[in-house]
Length: 117
Image (cartoon, rainbow, N blue to C red; front, side):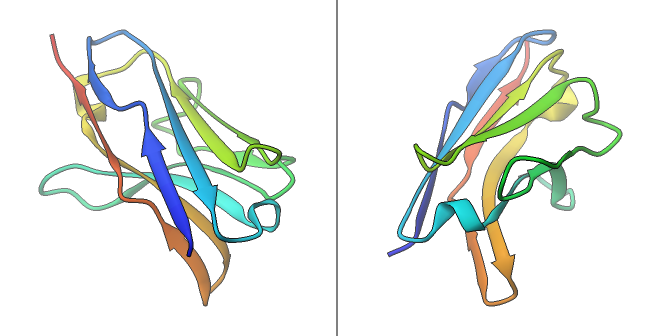
């Protein structure tokens, strides 16, 4: 069945960098757009980054521009997220999402990122 498994979360210091991975299986990975979201306690789910199926289009919200980089390796069925200059407000559960249509939309379980000194 469909699986999206995030890894790379943990405790990092403010100003540091983080690299997350999301390994996918059970669907045609290369035909799906991919997104990273995050959700902190008491806050709404927030888009962090997205990348098109080919990797030709990448997009970030203003809060992440200049700090986040999304990439994908279709041969490895994996999407990555790098965040630099981490801030305490980046603390959240980070979730991987694969999207092709309303009925083809899959989520990972999430990985916890905590930014604290």
